[in-house]
Length: 219
Image (cartoon, rainbow, N blue to C red; front, side, top):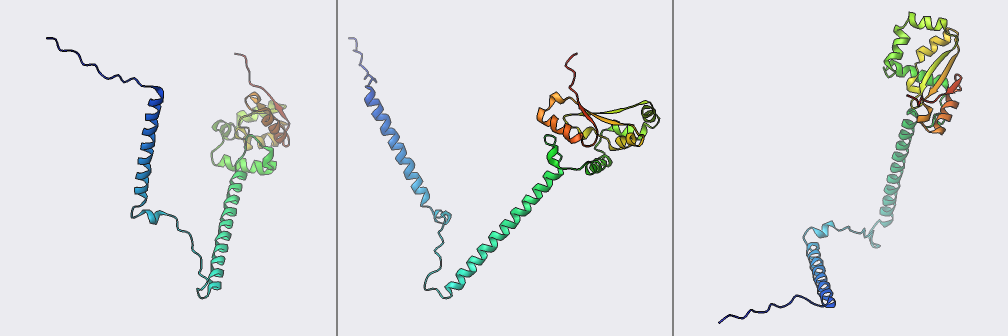
């Protein structure tokens, strides 16, 4: 005789029943987490980790006024020390900002041309100028003299992205000693913001005539 098949219970249920079960599961897990957190907080080291509130000085304590004055004095000294450190830190930051030459805002440097030339000479002695400029100033000798002898006007091409890095104080001094007019040509102005190019034009124009020039867009 063939054994009849047993019918399995269907897992289908209404949405309301399913949502109710899910809600109970969430509540159960939340209670478990809460209990675990509470047990963890009642450990031996938990009380020491809690921030303790300063109870202050009891009214019946002897010399209460002296203790309060001493505490106020220490607090005031700590605030003064903090203010002095902040002021010293601000001065140091301002000093670093003043020493750093800003490419985007040359007018804000408020640097006189004489001081700027002195700084460029220091940078040159440190080896920060381009090697080719040093060769023209030092080793060129005859070649540089011939060029200056034949030239009516000397154009010094400066990259608008870093004009000060393209300058050579020794070369500029040689041109001026030869009695030749020196003109700055600020090249590649289309690679920098318009405002930056205008400020460089105003800044460099205080020393020598300055003209603006775009880089070539034709191959």
